[in-house]
Amino acid sequence: MMKNEKTVIIKYNAGNISSVWFALARLGVEAEITTDAGTIRKAGRVIFPGVGEASSTMKYMREMGLDSVLRGLSQPVLGICLGMHLMCSSSEEGNTPCMGIFDSVVKRFVKGKVPHTGWNSISSLKGPLFANSSENSYFYFVHSYYVPADKFTTAVCDHETPFAAAIQKDNFFATQFHPEKSGDEGEKVLKQFLEI
Amino acid sequence: MLAKRIIPCLDVKDGEVVKGINFRNLKNIGDPVEHGSYYSSAGADELVYLDITATNEKRKLLSGLVKRIAAEISIPFTVGGGINEISDAGTLLDAGADKISVNSAAIDNPELVDSMARLFGTQFVVVAIDAKEENGVWKVYAGGGTRPAGRELFEWAKEVQERGAGEILFTSMNHDGTKKGFACKTLAALSDILSIPLIASGGAGKKEHFEEVFARGKADAALAASVFHYREIEIPELKRYLHEKNITVRL
Image 1 (cartoon, one colour):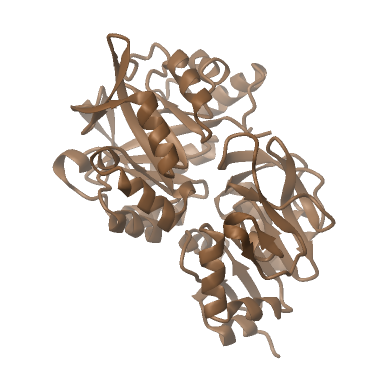
Image 2 (spheres, each protein chain N blue to C red):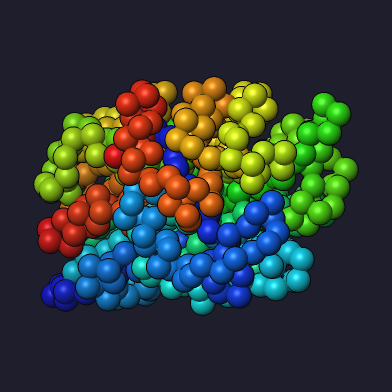
């Protein structure tokens, strides 16, 4: 299928979608917020953002048929926070079977203050998203569940336990932190995504 | 390592930033978006916008202002003041707020915390608590510190945590406006009983107070208004100071 240059943001029933839109606008990209399968398939880049709860969001994605749309995409896809979790195989949040793009299991923090809220440094950076980032730069996190560091991990963070700050498999990218809320450092990561 | 957060608080009235001295005697000093940008580039970790007229005068913060803030500023911000209903919170989320804070509305209707957490996620719900120590008891106040809520600080903080608050913003009314330091002992005790992050507020006067509130007060974040507004403390300098004192901050 011919892809256009458009960046789309998948809209769903929770979360601060507009902050992602605004962050892209600050980079000069006017994204389209959509639930339309055709628009998503044709887009040059897809962002699956999110704050919200796993089981209700996954239910919504299935009802809209968006889980299989997302799984079938070949253009660059960026999942953020809950978006990252839903791209894994399952989440302990509401014991939710997820999309299975990454065969990782999302776990709940059992140590430290939860939600893990605030700016934390990331390290062992790999892959195109972090081409312009330095080791130990700070990003904004807010989450109670995490993806354990594994073979897909492209950045590591630590909150009493090490976890994946970012993962990648082929065209699928995901970050646990919110690049749209991480100041200049976040802007660099979004910019890299837009240039893949 | 997770950094300790520095949070300037901007009190907003009629769309303009004002500074409060013990919640009263307001003095006008400017545009909320401009202030936010300034703080963001100075290294503030988050911003809190508090509509101080809202609770008393039943005025809603304009979602237009929130939209302008979200469009301009690339760090998280919380909006509080006059949020009484689910729909108020939903409007602010749609406008681009990262979190909302509820205070009096949670006291009057604790179920509101449960509903908001369920609908928007715990990370979206900050419960602000104003309390004053009277005869050894920390009594909670509603209505911008004007009305005794009939609650005790520790009990109330635990309750809202269980109801789904994602963070607690505790303002000591004994310390607020004094510039003599935060309520470190009480904050440490509160931090110990909570599993969610604690934001300390009230009493910041000099850099040393921030070191104390993190080292001794065990706070996860510290909020202040006037010391930042009147540039008595510059954020970059404060963060360098904290770094030298071995407090983890984002530089």
